[in-house]
Length: 234
Image (tube, rainbow, N blue to C red; front, side, top):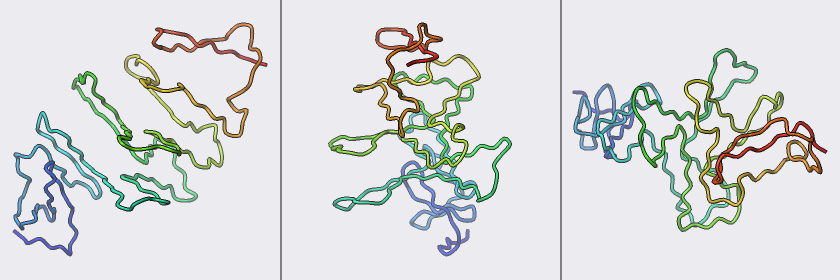
Protein backbone atom coordinates (compact mmCIF):
# COMPACT_ATOMS: atom_id res chain seq x y z
CA UNK A 1 0.00 0.00 0.00
CA UNK A 2 1.07 3.59 -0.51
CA UNK A 3 2.45 5.53 2.40
CA UNK A 4 0.51 8.38 3.99
CA UNK A 5 1.35 11.76 2.44
CA UNK A 6 0.72 14.57 4.95
CA UNK A 7 1.06 17.22 2.25
CA UNK A 8 -1.77 15.74 0.13
CA UNK A 9 -5.50 16.13 0.92
CA UNK A 10 -6.88 13.76 3.54
CA UNK A 11 -9.79 13.50 5.98
CA UNK A 12 -9.64 13.02 9.74
CA UNK A 13 -11.86 10.15 10.90
CA UNK A 14 -12.87 9.24 14.46
CA UNK A 15 -14.30 5.92 15.52
CA UNK A 16 -16.63 5.79 18.53
CA UNK A 17 -13.67 5.12 20.83
CA UNK A 18 -12.25 8.45 19.60
CA UNK A 19 -9.35 6.72 17.88
CA UNK A 20 -8.06 9.06 15.18
CA UNK A 21 -7.49 7.85 11.63
CA UNK A 22 -6.36 9.73 8.54
CA UNK A 23 -8.27 8.67 5.43
CA UNK A 24 -6.44 9.11 2.14
CA UNK A 25 -6.83 7.41 -1.24
CA UNK A 26 -9.23 4.80 0.15
CA UNK A 27 -6.91 3.80 3.03
CA UNK A 28 -7.19 4.47 6.80
CA UNK A 29 -3.91 5.29 8.60
CA UNK A 30 -3.58 5.27 12.37
CA UNK A 31 -1.01 7.22 14.33
CA UNK A 32 1.38 4.24 14.35
CA UNK A 33 1.46 4.06 10.55
CA UNK A 34 -0.75 0.98 10.34
CA UNK A 35 -2.96 0.84 7.25
CA UNK A 36 -6.54 -0.43 6.92
CA UNK A 37 -8.83 -0.70 3.94
CA UNK A 38 -11.78 -0.48 6.35
CA UNK A 39 -12.19 0.18 10.05
CA UNK A 40 -12.29 -2.90 12.33
CA UNK A 41 -15.69 -4.63 12.34
CA UNK A 42 -15.56 -4.82 16.15
CA UNK A 43 -16.14 -1.08 16.41
CA UNK A 44 -19.62 0.02 17.50
CA UNK A 45 -19.62 2.66 14.80
CA UNK A 46 -17.40 5.02 12.94
CA UNK A 47 -17.48 8.33 11.15
CA UNK A 48 -16.80 7.51 7.52
CA UNK A 49 -15.97 10.15 4.92
CA UNK A 50 -18.37 10.59 2.05
CA UNK A 51 -18.71 13.77 -0.01
CA UNK A 52 -16.54 16.75 0.81
CA UNK A 53 -17.41 18.22 4.19
CA UNK A 54 -19.76 15.35 5.07
CA UNK A 55 -19.67 12.43 7.46
CA UNK A 56 -21.77 9.27 7.45
CA UNK A 57 -22.11 7.34 10.70
CA UNK A 58 -22.77 3.60 10.90
CA UNK A 59 -23.67 2.13 14.31
CA UNK A 60 -24.01 -1.64 14.71
CA UNK A 61 -24.28 -1.99 18.50
CA UNK A 62 -27.69 -2.16 20.22
CA UNK A 63 -26.22 -0.29 23.21
CA UNK A 64 -23.56 2.01 21.76
CA UNK A 65 -23.46 4.51 24.62
CA UNK A 66 -23.12 8.07 23.40
CA UNK A 67 -22.16 8.37 19.74
CA UNK A 68 -21.91 11.70 17.92
CA UNK A 69 -21.23 11.93 14.21
CA UNK A 70 -19.89 15.47 14.51
CA UNK A 71 -18.54 17.10 17.68
CA UNK A 72 -17.84 20.79 18.10
CA UNK A 73 -16.24 21.10 21.53
CA UNK A 74 -14.83 24.37 22.84
CA UNK A 75 -13.36 25.31 26.21
CA UNK A 76 -12.57 28.77 27.56
CA UNK A 77 -9.21 28.81 29.34
CA UNK A 78 -9.10 32.55 30.08
CA UNK A 79 -10.01 33.82 33.53
CA UNK A 80 -12.89 35.77 32.01
CA UNK A 81 -14.50 36.77 28.73
CA UNK A 82 -15.41 40.38 27.92
CA UNK A 83 -16.36 40.16 24.24
CA UNK A 84 -16.44 37.90 21.20
CA UNK A 85 -18.46 34.95 19.93
CA UNK A 86 -17.87 31.30 20.77
CA UNK A 87 -19.78 28.84 18.57
CA UNK A 88 -19.57 25.06 18.91
CA UNK A 89 -21.11 24.42 15.49
CA UNK A 90 -22.17 26.93 12.84
CA UNK A 91 -24.28 26.37 9.77
CA UNK A 92 -24.80 29.14 7.22
CA UNK A 93 -26.32 29.46 3.75
CA UNK A 94 -25.61 32.65 1.81
CA UNK A 95 -27.73 33.80 -1.14
CA UNK A 96 -25.67 35.85 -3.62
CA UNK A 97 -26.62 39.53 -3.87
CA UNK A 98 -29.32 40.14 -6.44
CA UNK A 99 -30.20 36.47 -6.83
CA UNK A 100 -33.64 34.89 -6.28
CA UNK A 101 -34.47 31.64 -4.54
CA UNK A 102 -37.77 30.26 -5.74
CA UNK A 103 -39.58 27.12 -6.76
CA UNK A 104 -39.39 24.07 -4.51
CA UNK A 105 -36.33 25.34 -2.64
CA UNK A 106 -35.44 24.55 0.94
CA UNK A 107 -32.67 26.43 2.73
CA UNK A 108 -31.47 25.47 6.23
CA UNK A 109 -28.70 27.08 8.20
CA UNK A 110 -28.73 23.93 10.31
CA UNK A 111 -30.97 20.87 9.96
CA UNK A 112 -31.78 18.24 12.54
CA UNK A 113 -33.90 15.26 11.58
CA UNK A 114 -35.08 11.93 12.99
CA UNK A 115 -36.16 9.30 10.45
CA UNK A 116 -38.09 6.41 12.00
CA UNK A 117 -38.90 4.50 8.84
CA UNK A 118 -40.97 1.49 9.87
CA UNK A 119 -39.30 1.40 13.28
CA UNK A 120 -40.93 1.93 16.68
CA UNK A 121 -40.15 4.71 19.14
CA UNK A 122 -40.67 3.52 22.72
CA UNK A 123 -38.33 5.52 24.93
CA UNK A 124 -40.51 6.03 28.00
CA UNK A 125 -39.38 9.27 29.65
CA UNK A 126 -36.53 9.66 27.16
CA UNK A 127 -36.35 12.31 24.46
CA UNK A 128 -36.51 12.10 20.67
CA UNK A 129 -35.92 15.44 18.96
CA UNK A 130 -35.02 16.79 15.57
CA UNK A 131 -33.13 19.61 17.27
CA UNK A 132 -32.20 19.47 20.97
CA UNK A 133 -30.99 22.50 22.92
CA UNK A 134 -29.65 22.10 26.44
CA UNK A 135 -28.30 24.43 29.12
CA UNK A 136 -26.34 23.06 32.09
CA UNK A 137 -26.04 25.62 34.89
CA UNK A 138 -24.77 23.21 37.54
CA UNK A 139 -22.67 25.29 39.93
CA UNK A 140 -23.05 28.43 37.79
CA UNK A 141 -24.50 31.89 38.40
CA UNK A 142 -26.77 33.87 36.07
CA UNK A 143 -26.90 37.63 36.53
CA UNK A 144 -28.02 39.06 33.16
CA UNK A 145 -28.53 38.40 29.47
CA UNK A 146 -30.96 36.64 27.15
CA UNK A 147 -30.47 33.08 28.34
CA UNK A 148 -32.47 30.27 26.73
CA UNK A 149 -32.07 26.72 25.47
CA UNK A 150 -33.25 27.91 22.04
CA UNK A 151 -33.07 31.49 20.72
CA UNK A 152 -34.62 32.60 17.43
CA UNK A 153 -33.08 35.90 16.28
CA UNK A 154 -34.46 37.58 13.14
CA UNK A 155 -32.30 40.35 11.72
CA UNK A 156 -33.56 43.29 9.68
CA UNK A 157 -36.37 42.05 7.39
CA UNK A 158 -36.30 44.87 4.83
CA UNK A 159 -39.62 43.97 3.18
CA UNK A 160 -42.59 41.62 3.52
CA UNK A 161 -42.05 41.16 7.23
CA UNK A 162 -45.61 39.84 7.38
CA UNK A 163 -44.29 36.66 5.75
CA UNK A 164 -41.80 36.03 8.59
CA UNK A 165 -42.51 34.17 11.84
CA UNK A 166 -40.33 33.78 14.90
CA UNK A 167 -41.36 30.14 15.23
CA UNK A 168 -43.26 28.12 12.63
CA UNK A 169 -44.72 24.72 13.42
CA UNK A 170 -46.26 22.56 10.69
CA UNK A 171 -47.97 19.18 10.85
CA UNK A 172 -50.50 18.59 8.06
CA UNK A 173 -50.21 14.86 7.34
CA UNK A 174 -50.70 11.69 9.35
CA UNK A 175 -52.64 11.48 12.60
CA UNK A 176 -53.57 14.33 14.92
CA UNK A 177 -50.67 15.26 17.22
CA UNK A 178 -51.09 16.06 20.90
CA UNK A 179 -50.23 19.77 20.85
CA UNK A 180 -48.49 22.53 18.94
CA UNK A 181 -46.41 23.43 22.01
CA UNK A 182 -45.98 21.41 25.19
CA UNK A 183 -44.33 22.78 28.32
CA UNK A 184 -43.28 20.94 31.48
CA UNK A 185 -41.62 23.71 33.46
CA UNK A 186 -41.15 25.21 36.89
CA UNK A 187 -41.64 28.81 35.74
CA UNK A 188 -43.09 32.07 37.03
CA UNK A 189 -44.92 32.84 33.79
CA UNK A 190 -46.25 30.77 30.91
CA UNK A 191 -45.45 33.67 28.54
CA UNK A 192 -43.33 36.78 29.14
CA UNK A 193 -44.16 39.19 26.31
CA UNK A 194 -42.52 42.48 25.38
CA UNK A 195 -44.20 44.23 22.45
CA UNK A 196 -41.15 45.93 20.90
CA UNK A 197 -42.18 49.36 19.62
CA UNK A 198 -45.51 49.07 21.42
CA UNK A 199 -49.18 48.46 20.58
CA UNK A 200 -48.69 45.78 17.93
CA UNK A 201 -50.08 42.77 19.77
CA UNK A 202 -50.08 43.78 23.45
CA UNK A 203 -52.94 46.23 24.13
CA UNK A 204 -54.51 47.66 27.25
CA UNK A 205 -58.27 47.07 27.27
CA UNK A 206 -61.23 48.00 29.44
CA UNK A 207 -63.88 45.94 27.64
CA UNK A 208 -64.27 43.27 24.99
CA UNK A 209 -67.10 42.30 22.70
CA UNK A 210 -70.20 40.89 24.36
CA UNK A 211 -69.53 37.37 23.16
CA UNK A 212 -66.31 35.62 22.12
CA UNK A 213 -66.00 34.66 18.49
CA UNK A 214 -63.98 31.56 19.29
CA UNK A 215 -61.89 29.72 21.84
CA UNK A 216 -58.42 28.19 22.02
CA UNK A 217 -58.30 24.73 23.56
CA UNK A 218 -55.46 24.11 26.01
CA UNK A 219 -54.62 21.49 28.59
CA UNK A 220 -53.43 22.41 32.09
CA UNK A 221 -53.14 20.72 35.46
CA UNK A 222 -56.84 21.57 35.86
CA UNK A 223 -57.66 19.56 32.75
CA UNK A 224 -58.89 20.72 29.35
CA UNK A 225 -59.62 24.47 29.35
CA UNK A 226 -60.70 27.06 26.80
CA UNK A 227 -59.35 30.59 26.29
CA UNK A 228 -61.98 32.83 24.66
CA UNK A 229 -61.00 35.07 21.75
CA UNK A 230 -62.78 38.28 20.81
CA UNK A 231 -63.21 40.12 17.53
CA UNK A 232 -62.95 43.56 19.12
CA UNK A 233 -62.05 45.41 22.30
CA UNK A 234 -62.01 48.91 23.74
